[in-house]
Every structure is written in structure tokens, then in C-alpha cells.
Amino acid sequence: MTGALAVRQDVTLTPDPRRVIVKLFVPGEDDAVVRTRARALIDRVAHLDDEETGRLLRDTFDRFGARHRDLDGTLHHHYDLVRHRIARARALSPTTRLLVGAYFSHEYAVEAAALCNPSMMAHPDQTGLTAGQLRVAVSLRQIGEGHLSSIGFATAVLGPGRRLSVADRSGPLVVGQRVGVPRRRDLLAAGLAEEDCDNEITATVLDALPERYDEATFERVLGDLPPELLFRSTGPDTLDHLRRTNAASYATAFPADTTLHQRVLWPATPAESNGLEDARFVRFADESGPVYRATYTAYDGRRIASRELASKDLRRFEITPMRGPGVRNKGVALFPRTVGGRHLALCRTDGETIGLTCLEGENRWQEPVPLHTPRDSWELIQVGNCGSPIETDAGWLVLTHGVGPMRRYAIGALLLDLRRPDRVVARLPGALLTPEAGDRDGYVPNVVYSCGALIHDGELWLPYGASDNRVGFATVPVATLLAAMEK
Image (tube, rainbow, N blue to C red; front, side):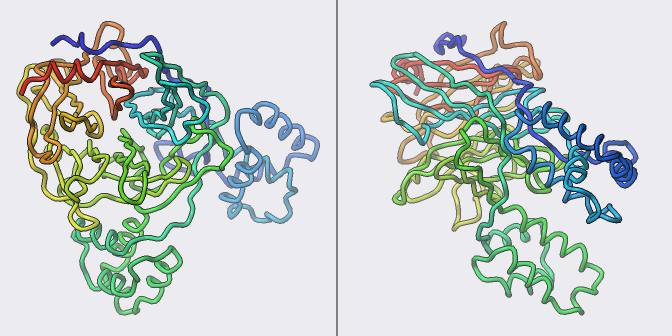
């Protein structure tokens, strides 16, 4: 196979440098040797006269106000973050406070470097469509300056037939705001065990916490620890470890009047400080109803960790860590439903083999069963999944990626038994989609890669990243793909 099965669409998404958010900027923190210049800057702003202060603030809102949803609120927030450095904060006028916030802010283009690795799922809103159409939500990996990744979205309509239209993505972006969420003691315990952090302090904390707790309860339990435990040499490090592990679970929400393409899932914990990578979304269904679930890779600049998020409406997201030997690497992809009463996921714990892992209890993914190892020339370096398995009458359709000479990525396919997904029943004897001349050049050359496709009206719709530079779409009739697979 040479990739002729998949037909490319003419529609592409390219990185848009106008998609910007406002980030905190502290002068000096970007130097090789950190020397915060904040206090001196605040003093200089405070000494401006009222006329100059007003003019500068008006100019700031004229230049940037229309590019952001609530610039006033953001500048107030950034002022609050640095006001501890101001000797006479109460003496500053409201205008000066906002201007201080402006000097401690900067715009960040979330996808200035790259746009790639999409997944596709049915959109929560299916109103206003005609026969043969399906509205879909497309998740996107957005990469900006410093190779910092976040999760963004686009909305598209599929059909009738192979028609595809992508909605406009313009308008101010919004970063989700942290909201309260009950945390789970078992996840905290699993995280501590995984890091071999087991001592008198952690045991005392776990014993004092209820099964579900909030942030205030957690801090109260830490505050009630006996002094003789806190004064031990391991005390400060253990408290820091407890807080870091606890912070891995959180929730983020967006205003109800924002549209999907305006929402940005931005790093919110230390473990995510260098990015949220390669979200694999799937619409999961069980007896409680459908919910959007996804896995992604949290990266702090040194270590990676698997995370899961869940949302009923793609507006409020709950994030939890994934624990256990089955999720100790990138590329975890959830099944869209339970199989035989079990929660299953594809994984690649050794970095080169597609495996199948099962959730044990509620918090531990088991050692995986190998499904597919590198065997053909186009995938000899490594193989992995391209998103969640897709249910068909013939079996679970798994799109794969393989890496060959010159680190060239291509997309293939496997078929797993519906009732026994640990059994591979068929495979495509070659690649479904390969980098063509127009796909080869980009931020990461010679790559086609996807984080999740879907089936609509008998057609497999495959969104894919091309060389981490743009997102394309390809289609193939499911019957054609299945017929080309070998048992």
C-alpha cells in the first residue's frame, strides 16, 4: 500500500499568529540569571503624572482591548499578583493599578510555532443541520514560543458525502479558570505510592483525609500535622511532594457564552508547566450517559505524565492523573465504552510497542498486553496508536502510526476482536496515509500523525497533523479499508 486508500480533502487548518492570550510577564525572570526588576519598574510607573498614566492606559486598551475578552479584568489580576512589591499600594489610583498590570503583561501567540495532532469527536450541539450532516469538535495541539503546548479546538461539519466545512476560528481566546472539584484520596495515595513517598507524614495525612475532600480540607489536615513529624529532616520535602501530587487533580471551566474555538486548555499545575501534549479525545458512553474523555501528556520540562480529562459539555473539564504501569509513557488512548465490564486503553509503555491495558479498581492501569510490535519497513523504529479504537461490526478499528527511515511517520491500521480486544484479527499490509510532497516540510518534517478519527455515514474521517505545521483531513470508505486488511 502507498497511501492511495485515503483521499485528502482540500481543507486545511494553519497556525494563526493572531490567536493570542495575555500572560503574566515579570521583567528579569526571562534572563539566564534571574534578577527580578519588578520593584524598580513599579516605582517608575507610580511616578508618572496622572495625565501620562491616563494616556498610556487609554492607548493600551485602544491597541489590545478588542483582541481579548476581558482585558480590564486580566490587568487587575496581574496587578494583584505583584502588588506585594508595592510599599504604598493603597496610595495608587485605580488607573495606576491597571497600568501596573499592563506593564506586567504580554501577549502570547498560542499556535505561532505549530498546529498539529488533532482528534475528532461528535460535537455537543447537533442543531441546525440537514440530512447527512454531522457537526464535529476537533481538538488541536497548539505550540507557541518555547515549544509550549496547549489544547485548542475547532468546529467543523461533515457531509453530506465527503463535504467538509470548518467554522471560522477568529475572536478573542479564553483560558479556562480553575474551579473547585472534589479530590479523591485513592488517587493521592496511588500517586504517592508510585513515587515511593511512604513515610509517617504521608500515612498520617492519608489516614486523616476522607474519601472525597476539597482543597481547604487538605490544607487543614496538613496544618494539623504533629510538630514532631514536621520537624524531621524529610518534613519539608514530603509536604512539597504532597502538595504537588494533590495538585494533579483539578477542574477548569469557561464562561457559558464562549464558543468552542475560543477555549484554550492551558497548563495549570507544575507537572504541566511545559505543556499539554497530544490530547486523544473520545465520546465515551455507558449507563450514565455520554461524556467526553481524553488523555494527554503533561510535561514539566524534564518528566512526562499521563493525564485524563472528562467533560459533559466541552465547557467544564475535570482533570485527574493516571496511575499504574500501563500509562507510564505517552500515547494512551481510551476505548469509547467498557468491554466485558472493563475499562480498557491502548498504550505504549516501552516506547515502541502498541499494548492493551485494563483499569484495575478505579485508579491503577495494569501491565499491558502487547498487541503489535514494529515489523514492516515503514514502522521499524516504533509503532503507536493514532487515537481511540473505533467500533465497527467487524471489530475495533485501531489507527496506528509507524516511524521509518529518516524518522518518517506514516499511518496504518489494525483490527481487534470486538469481545477480545487483546486479539489482533486483521491488519492493513502497509500504510493508509503517508507524507506526500506537500506534507513533508514544517516544524517537524516528514510526519503525518493523528490523535483520533471517527466514522460518519460509512466514511472514516481522519484529521491529521502534517509535519507539525498544519492540520489536514482525509477520508476513506470503511468498507474499502476493511476489505484491504489481511487476517
